[in-house]
Image (cartoon, rainbow, N blue to C red; front, side, top):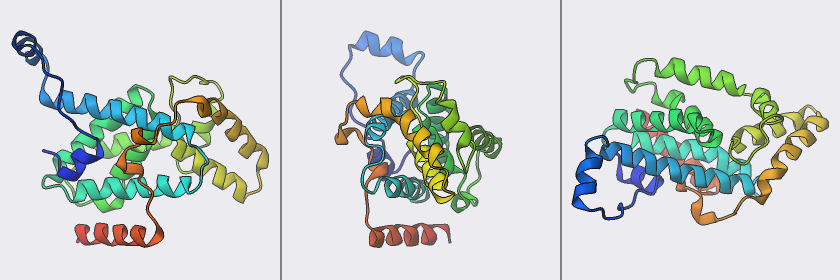
Length: 223
C-alpha cells in the first residue's frame, strides 16, 4: 500500500462507477494495482507535457533537482518502502516503454540514489536502472539530446531534466552551438498545452530553506 503522500503525489482519485457486470468481467483480467498504475502513468504523462511547454522558465532547473528529493521522501516515509519502490519502478518501466522520458529519467535517478541502498530492492532492479542511465547518456545526456534530433514528434516526450543538465554543462564549457542545438530541439514542445494543474506535486517549487529541510528529513529517514 502506498503512503498517503505517495497517493497525493500521483493524484489517485476515485474511479468512475461501472455496471456490476462490467466490473466483474474487468476484474477477471484486471487488478486495483493495474488501475493505480494506469492512473499514475496518465497523470505523469500530462505532467511531463506541461513541463516541456514550460522548459527554461524561472527556477526550472531547481524544480527538476528537487523532484528527486520529493520522490525519495515519498519512498522513505512510506510504511512499506519496498512496495512503494516497486510501484515507482513499474512506473519507470512503463513510462520508458511509452516514451515518457521525463518521468522515466527522474524516477530512475531517484530509485538509484544512495539514500535507498538500505532497501531490499527487487532482483535486477539496479542492473535495469544502470542500463537506463547509460541509454540516456547520464550524466552528460548527450545521447538523449541527440536522439531527439531524429525523434521530433509530440508523441515522444523528452526528459526536460536531461535537456536542462545538458544545456548547463555545455554553457559551462562554452559549447554554445550545442546549447543552441538543444534549445532548437525543444522548440516544438513550447506549443503543447500549458496547464500548471497537470504538473505533479513531485515538481513543486520550493525555496532554498525548504530544500535544506527536505534534505535533512531524507537524511533522518536513512538513519
